[in-house]
Image (cartoon, rainbow, N blue to C red; front, side, top):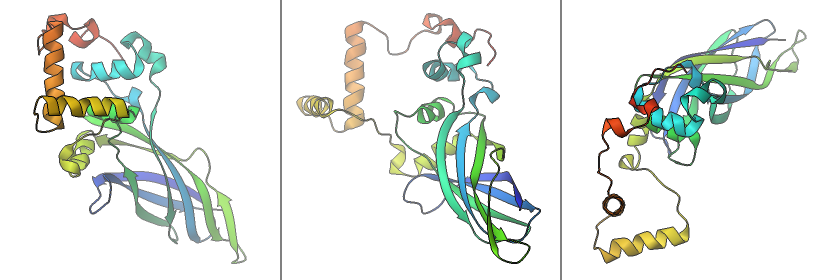
Length: 235
C-alpha cells in the first residue's frame, strides 16, 4: 500500500472567497504502492504556542489564555485552529494542492484572541493528517488504505497574514456576541446620546467608565503587572 508524506511550502490569502480564508500550499509525495486515484484527507491545523517566544506586548493575551508565566510550562497546549476535509485528485508520485483554512472573527474563540494579541513575528503551526487513500493494487483493482496517524507537517506563518486576510472583509471590523438585553441597552445608549455608530458608542461607554472609576485612559507602565513590564521568563 502507498505511504504518503506531507509538507507545507507556503501560505497566502485566498482570493474571491465568501469568508476570510488562507491557502496552505501542501505537497504530497507517495512512497510505495501503486497509482493514487484520490485521497479523502482530513487535516487538523493547530497553533504550537509553546514553540515561539513572546515579548512584552504579547503577554497580556497570553496570560488570559494560559494563566501566569510560571504556569505556561504546563498550560501552553496547542490551540486548534481548524479541521478541514478535502479531496486530492489522482496523482502518481507527487502532487501539490491548496488547503483552504478559514479565519474567523469570533472573539470567543481562543485562536482569535491569540492572533489579535500576537501580531508580529511568526506563528508556529502543526498540520496533522488522516484519512483514506484510494489506490491501484498489484492487480490493477481499486484498493483503500488509511493514512498513518503519525503523518504531520510543520510551518511558520507570518502573524500579520491573519490580520491581512481579515482586513479584506468588512473593512477590518470585528464581531462581539451580545445577549438581546445587552444589545438593546447598547442601542438605547447610542440613541440617548445621539451617537453615530457602534465604534463611537462603545468608545463613549469606555470613556464614561474610566471617568467614573478615576482611571486614566493610558496606564503608566509602572502600574502594570510584573509579567507585562518585561520580567524575565521562558515559555
